[in-house]
Image (cartoon, rainbow, N blue to C red; front, side):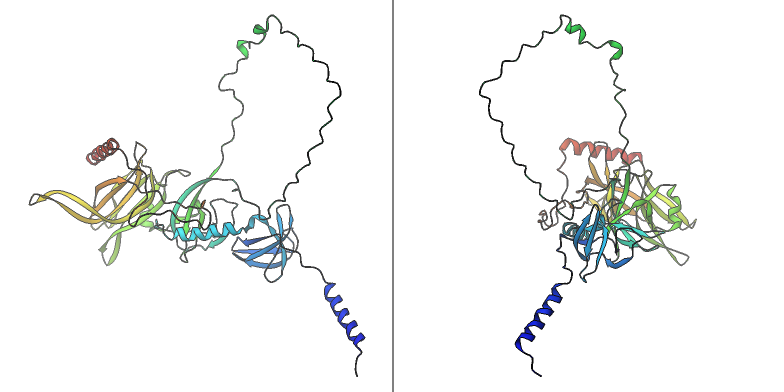
Length: 426
């Protein structure tokens, strides 16, 4: 049976009309990326609303609607749900996080740590920043850096750019009067005793201590930059971390928090391998420096226990602590030339009384720790997160360590004299 052309045209128009009668797909206002490890998108804003989709960290979402701090987003599969704006990252923040991973690869580890409970790892050292990763209890992670930051929400640019402000049209100027206004009358003269009246009575002069209520101090948090086995890096609260040094050594912490530790050498005792340990500790939290004491433990073959071989207290030390061979100049001479021997050792960056930071190197000779040398510290390890994404890295010559400008001759002489005095006091 043949259909007439009119019937075919009517059917085509009817099918097109049915397709166009469906709901229109809202246009995207902005693009965001999932910040947490997993994020539930809900049908409505309340937390008890049903979940319509679960997305993972880094997935791209289209923002289609906004209600105060809540955003309605659309997934790549077309699922639509609501979430909080602070749980999404912008493209710039995702680039910063990736750069954090790359920079963390170059930082030397300061020891392994673990946690007794699920540990949230944040994109920034702030409690309200997205937690994109969770560390399981007992899982080992590497400690890299330490930072103290205010417990306030970090400033962030909104995902949806604000609408441009309307430029108000300039108001029309009133026409000038045909006749000018009359001149103003002269002001009255001040009283004859105006100087006496302007003086404040002695009893009413405020003292310096009565300046009104002082602002409350801003609470601070201790944060640690950590690195997982998979190479991911992020910020975790320092109070939730426990350094994974053996308990038979950790028991000597005397209530101080261990901030880094390193094995120096091994000895055999009754078929068991015992390490000599170097550790750093800090007695109080929320400090600008990383440790205030460092100590070397050795294993006593006679008493079968750990004993202290060296300890330095009341210092201001900074990461990184490095373990490396150290060249020690001996006082003995062979054929009229000084003898230099290389031993296992370590170095720490500490701040002297003159405010300058110096890296002190120590040689570990069997069970004895000896001071070897002192030089200005290299630049403190940091994270260049303020640099725009895609900007070139600062150029550094091969083998050169960027650091502070060289100290003057008198400053170096003073530091050297202080180092000699410290050696004799030990």
